[in-house]
Length: 426
Image (cartoon, helix red, strand yellow):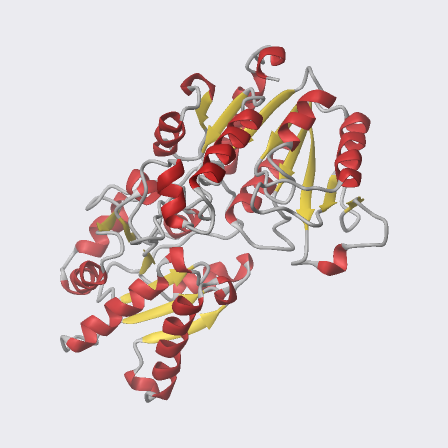
């Protein structure tokens, strides 16, 4: 069985959850007898050195069965690539490879219409689409978080979307919905890493029979460890991108509230980067806090900024904390950092919505707090620092996170399902 995985970026070039999962799946499928996987990962202006004159699809770093799609001129409004030459190269690539399964882990940098192109080129292939967020539903970055007031969005409509992005009329969002649904219709199966996502897509109007839940899984190439249950557990870690929806600003506000109450017996270690992708307001708030913290004497600092990290540094970073905080202010689809924290025996403190709320059992293997509420987070941090036996109880309640092998097995079941006739969808 030939399986082509189509990925948004290559994780060795641009870090991100969806591309990391696509690559984990690729590596896992390589271990399965009778399966030959291929990876097509996009590159764009983030990695200009990958581009060569006249090239559209190239090999990647001499690696077997790994290729780069050199995306240019992508239309983020309609999510399509206007280049006819790129479409022709993608068509030729499919014709040369002739995969039995084409599995899209994203459409961004390619175009949602590449699903339809795939169906036209390979009418008998199985087409699988994995939704890593709600980009097909939501024009506001796929977060389904209202830009009007920051609340979570449960329902998209032409008027509601116009209220979030008023520069475009309601009619645009009406046509956008038709455009997205038309091309998603050619997929035989749509998978989601979290179950709660399916309800959003079904409420939007997609066929529930097409959906399958397949968990994200990964292989941790480091030896797990557990911290001592003795003593205080007052060290907290943030791991991830410093962008608005990841909620680092909420965590920093909670730190300020705790200080104002006279409680300072804790530390927060910030591990991450990409603050340049944050909005101007969010970036200003975070950088102002960091600057003020740097002016304090070292002994008085509650927040330590460690910066970006590679996967092989994760063990050392996790060893410095007792708890991992996930203060996201959007649905946070699956949250790989929860899996990473659990792999090292670290309980997670997270917002009470979306993927974290689905994965974490409050009071058993972690703690949940009201999404976006800095005071609620401050109260939870105080409880974590002061309640005797809490850390040990939660650490004991952690179950191993999903493995790469579990994910591979789940997708192999999806690939093996009899494909629906493509003619009606096309």
